[in-house]
Image (cartoon, rainbow over all chains, first blue to last red; front, side, top):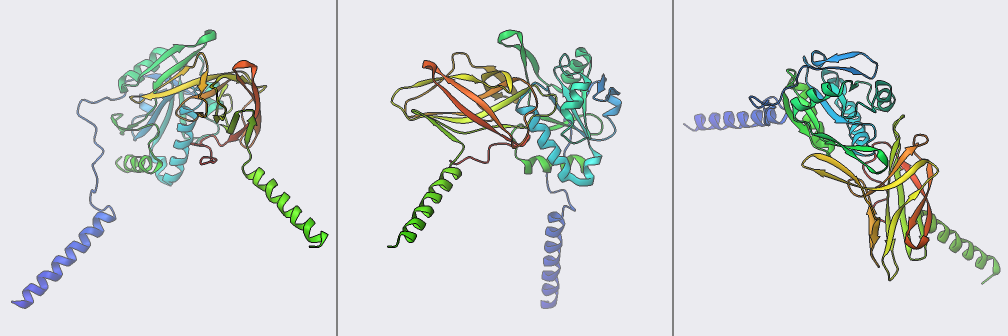
Length: 200
Length: 161
């Protein structure tokens, strides 16, 4: 009788130890899976060009998970810091970063030409593709993801753009699966990107 | 005490004051105004706008209105606020300047009110010092230098002063 109890106890301890090891090492799902909401936003078909003047459509986004940020080059703070942060995060992902697509879509195609984008993106991760083109194509893409942006006139005849400051996370089918909020810490952001890259 | 020892002490004292001055440096005092750690971020090539951040302290007994500034590095300087409202970034120019209360301060910082350097004549380069003249009502001006931090600097490393 005692032997059974002893073996049982050992077995139980073994299971607990192995189980916690498994969770700790991520062999089992330890967190919420990244799943798109049924009927949630999914990228529309679009035709834009990147900073090298190459045509980009939704087909260039689909096929692997991606991150997409909507901004403009006349933005002094949110946009450069988000791009710098994204660059650092992609670096931290190491080889896994190659599993992700990364896109900077301008909400100000009037001013942000491919050449402008090329210059602007040059200090950041070269994997980030800058997209510009026809305003109505930008609108189609932005609307499909629920991105808000609006032109706001400023004194002296210029304008600024209000825009959603979050980084959008898309799965390989182009479905919205989450965001990295502006100001969200690097640790949380990295974890989201790791989940995105591995959940491919 | 010999004159040598006294001289040595004076030198040590003087040096420590100098070093203290340098370590507390990057502050500018003009009458009741103290400007602490003006800084900006390096800009990507082709970017035509930059930001400006600093703390403006009014040690005087009357409020002072901060009106903006000018710099040879850009066509004009404006004060802007930035709000992230429900995930949407909205930037707006501030008209009428910002009042710095008597015995109080105004902080121009990332995520809040800040200066916009509009029409940059060339990119802001990390570790450069960019001259900027701050303008207050009553014709008061203060010349400062913006220290250029890295492109992704979330905040100046000079917080806590």
